[in-house]
Length: 62
Image (tube, rainbow, N blue to C red; front, side):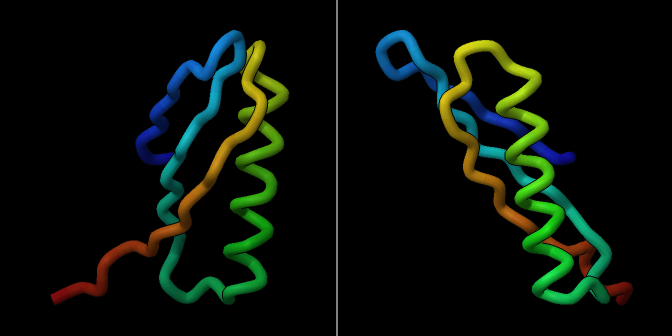
């Protein structure tokens, strides 16, 4: 997983995360990765109420 940023809203936490995936991944597979990452974050971090996960791809070789 790339960067994860968290912020407190009252007594709850919200997170934004970036996940870098292989550029050949389909949109459906990328969405599945994002959902799995969101669920893992919410389970792992106490008081985390929600996580927004952004999917990015590995840049093409030059």
